[in-house]
Image (tube, rainbow, N blue to C red):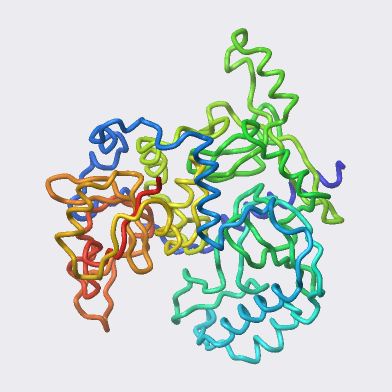
Length: 470
């Protein structure tokens, strides 16, 4: 056990160092005041106080559970891992693996060296790793959890593949980043054993085997994540420590992560309620998973300061809390598919709603299908109708969809419509060939006139749908 704990901590140390040394694209200094946004608008309470009954619950916890079931019934990519068939036909996975491989192979993609990725690379290097012909006729599922935030990839390689030369921030193999303690069902593995093909709650793809710890049965995972027995990370991120003195940090989980509480520590805490102060109660004691040498799960105790931005169970699902959660990410780095430990537009929306217990899809097209549809529009048309819908829409809970972009609606000030969103750049010029941009690369507040002087048109011009997540 001591050896496993040592290896776990060494791995975390190496990961943290490597991440810090990566040559990341520069992040413009924030907060960026875009379009007509003012300094006062950079605070959540500015928007909350403009909303009648902003603190009123939109749904109770029980209603949210039913709502999440409805989302899973509507969106195929949203899956309850605990309800997957224990044994399934191999052909389903064979067909999916072949489709995903062929789709990527047939695209014209470039490497970070700006050279075209030849088909030979797919056929000789990647296809043997996928080993489609090794999928059994009947798959007996295995179950695990992530031991850290980990990338979900279209193919079992770390190689970046780019749609355009030099576009290093947009790796076309990157689906998303799933969080610590995410449960997964395991279908298949790569020929070198370094990758697993898994189903997570809102995405399917390849993850690094070293980031997955196996449980004997999925019910063993479920008992650690049962209602009322976990912390929810409600800040941008928090620190988990190895020691009760909170000196040796071992991990930094991000918004929306669920971390199981140690039951014995929780019972002791409940007995002392009304007697001991928060300070004397000490830090929260949580379970941290790690992967043993044989791939099975090991659990060690971690400690979280009571001053951390966490809650026991989910906060109330309200307009006010949605806006507060969104503004905790103001200025946070943009990251396509979770790259660079950032969030893209739909990743930002996903984390905000996830931290309040809503299992939104990860993809913006799918997010736009959830809840109550307020309207569908044609780009550069339906201006009067869009304005009427926006004036009646509920801030915080309303999502505005553009092609390839997702935004959270904040409200109206002086006939301007405002949003908070994670965006990579603002296009500033009228010439499509020059494609002039202003790098933003973070979560910002702006009105819908952003990009309005460019050839692509303003955010408002390009809205194609609006929906309330209720």
